[in-house]
Image (tube, rainbow, N blue to C red; front, side, top):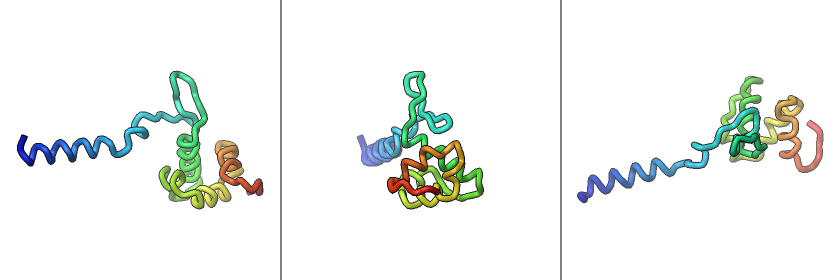
Length: 99
């Protein structure tokens, strides 16, 4: 195998492994589809929170919510009373303060 072919194989394998878990996750309204059932997972709840925030006009990505707890808290202060994300926001506020 020549060097160019080896480099191509390396690049393709590196790109394929960027985020394999996220590729197989299917969410619906904050719940993950697992073996035909819906299961509440933090990944899908954060995705739902980002979708609701965008509906309110806040520019935020799913990954910002997942990776930055302060962003999640700030978003929850704004949209935390919405029924779609109320429980998600309660979990992100461990001090029990109201929004």
